[in-house]
Length: 566
Image (cartoon, rainbow, N blue to C red; front, side, top):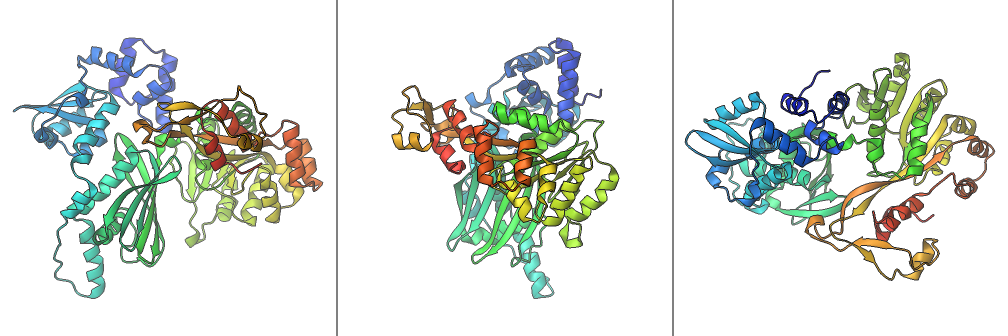
């Protein structure tokens, strides 16, 4: 097997710490997910970070250094750009006449070293440091050198000459404004800060007075910056320029995307613009490929729904639906499933709008309604390609639903999403679309409803005393002194919120013969749900959430927030 990371491969082989089978597994995961090999070794439990750093230090004669504990000369920082530091995860420490000492989390390859040597004009020497410590130093010495208001206060006007007409004036003026150094630095700061804070979305919202910048972190929007109104045109133009949007059409909604490499990760941004009365509003969805391609077993599912899901995806035909609102993690679940099924003997095709993550080994198709390349048209064509598994981004209309269901009945395993509140409601949604009851019952093998809830910060978790009896009664729990719930007190680690990270709640309904018969015989959804719960066939989202609250993973308040009343 080809081994892409020469440095770490040498370390692992020379150390005899891993077996040949473990090595091949690590490289296979790297190839499929795009994650850094170093992170895979730690996440999979092959090595701890300390063990890996010790091996690197021993085999490459590289000492360990903690950059956070020392003050670095600003002139040394200026020798390497922030973009280079983040891209290669390195930090400059000390510069002499003929060499520059840098901290790295793993030895740089010879090509990167040669490029750095040419760029800096001297020899490069390396010491080891933890990746987290390097990122902390980059943030302290680069990003925080200037705040966003300080950057924008330096903005200078540019004179535009030699233009032929007013249309040219508007277009070129906006392009030039978007290229001003303060605007470029401000947008770069926003993007990097959002990634560092693990935001899923960036919202740029114009108001009458300013431009608000908010980050969605763990599903909750938090205000981050307020940009002066005078910079609105420049920031908007910059976002549109890098997203390949039409700069002059501020009166129409537009969609675009762009790609950047930062902090050693490849990040895609999906951009949506919308005209408002105070200017263009932008939402940038942050798509971290390595973060999205998580093992199915690592998404935080409880054993009962995970078991049903694993059983269903092992079948060779039928339809599996993942339901839930926008932002409930449906796409992440589907990509995790496809990654698990992605083997050389299986032909997998996805039909998406848009393709969020590109995965090697899959045939991925992006629909384009503007040229009549719709879900329905693609489905009709791809059946001639003899796929084993098909993923349809979303079932939106009767024709797509009908084609998907019929495909599942003739030998394909179909995955898709549907916007319903719970698993049972998927039956009603498909029947309302005009699909015959017997087709719905015959095709579906599993329906899942999903939500994401915030996890209590492990650094400040504490037990909750004296839970109000009304809440206990509402949850359907018998009052018991042994009941324990937890909350996050709030600390610097979680930005005073009491929460850090998210986990998934999953409600899974196996469509077995009894359920099929009830659907065909027009038994009401309420009766089907009551029967499934009573027989232990269905654990609701609320019940799954309570299990996680009892375990101290999340809080009662969070379960109330993300789940509907049963």
